[in-house]
Structure formats: structure tokens, C-alpha cells
Image (cartoon, rainbow, N blue to C red; front, side, top):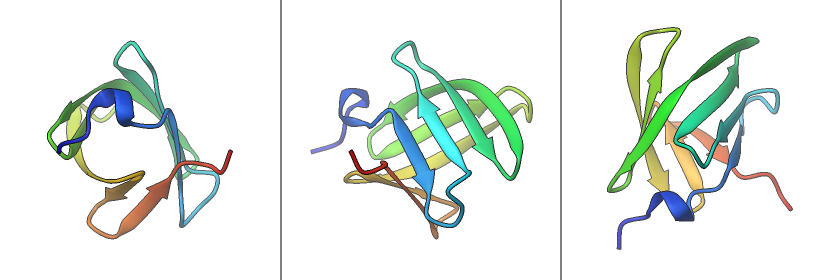
Length: 83
């Protein structure tokens, strides 16, 4: 069954850099720290895809949802921090 927004975690951290962090907010907005830069915008979930609309870049990014991980650019894995 396809994941829903409710099943998504609220925070994801890149396996490649622990400083890179994605925060998904309940109101459909997000904040992203990546490569020393800050980004924000809105998100929605379509099937197994998390769609981020990044305001600063004026672009859409599609991220694959795999169980409790996010796959960015096909190879970068973002995970929820251990509780």
C-alpha cells in the first residue's frame, strides 16, 4: 500500500552528511539544510513520491519513499534519526 503523509517521519538526515537535515512540518511546509545552505517550501505526497517545492530554487524535487527512508537523486539515502 502506498505511504501517506501521516506515515512519513518529521525529520530525515542524510547518510552522506549528518549536517544535512530535512524537517517536514504538519502544515505541509518543510525546511532543509543541505551543503551549508538553507531551503524551504512546501511538500506533498503522491504515491511513493515525496514532492518538494523549493522556494529559493523555484523548482520541484521528487524524492522516492522507501519504508522509513527517503532516496534522493536515486542514490542518496536519508533516514530518520534514531529515537
